[in-house]
Image 1 (cartoon, rainbow, N blue to C red):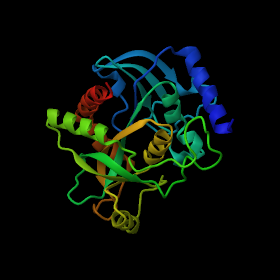
Image 2: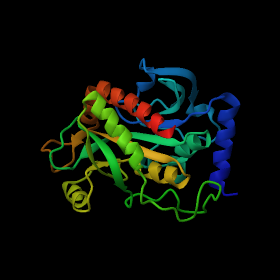
Image 3: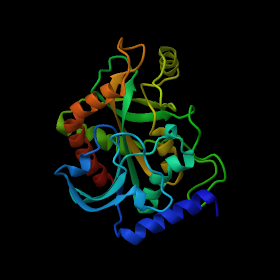
Image 4: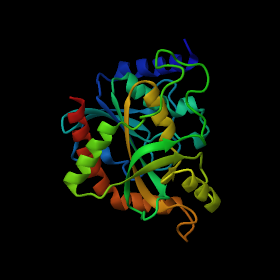
Amino acid sequence: MSKVYEKLLKCCSSVREKIDFTPEIALVLGSGLGDYAESPDVTVEAVLDYHDIEGFPVSTVQGHKGRFIFGYVREIPVVIMQGRIHYYEGYPMSDVVLPVRLMGMLGAKVLFLTNASGGIQEGMHAGDFMLITDQISDFVPSPLIGENPDELGTRFPDMSHIYREELREAVRAAAGKLGIPLKEGVYIQLTGPNYESPAEIRMCRAIGADAVGMSTACEAVAANHMGMKVCGISCVSNLAAGISGNPLTHKEVQETADRVAPMFKKLVTESIVEIAAVLK
């Protein structure tokens, strides 16, 4: 048994000792969505702080609460991750994706990723939403490096369809029902925590990226490896360096994310409803 899988089993056992709940959908909350679990659309059954899970990594990012919420979104069983782990916090990549793998082991069949990103695509504006159609993760270590946990998936998994078309169609349907404009594009993950230079953004654009951030892609790889279906929505919180004339700040990211949060929450809820219909 690999050390990665052994640690995962310990975390899963620790959760199961405290929580008796089987989710269908795992939702990772990005910037601006931190209080989604407190919205009227969510019926909370149980809350579990990361500190209370044996061996679990803890987020150090300001504004990330660091806990799992177990409950229902319109009667659909979900586990909500309030506060993700980032590679730039200094954790090994196996720990960064451990929460995603854990939610899969707890029963979730779908991983719904959200994040805040820098807009690269022509015509993007701060506050836009982008449905992630594909990703570029070459600039961060693969979470699959090292001994392969055969219990989770194959040594050389296919990545042709990380973001499942049927789930993307469900999100499109949700946005259409709500009248929310939805851009589509490729997300690229860089390590952070520094924002990108204008030259780096030109590189990202040249290789086909439409939005850039410091999370998500590694989580999608790990989830796809273990057979979870993945979808993702990125909130464009700012235009990337060299596109906007203003210096980039975390305050700007948070302000934009907070401003569009009410609309983002509606989109997430309706998307979960549409995704659940696809799973039946």
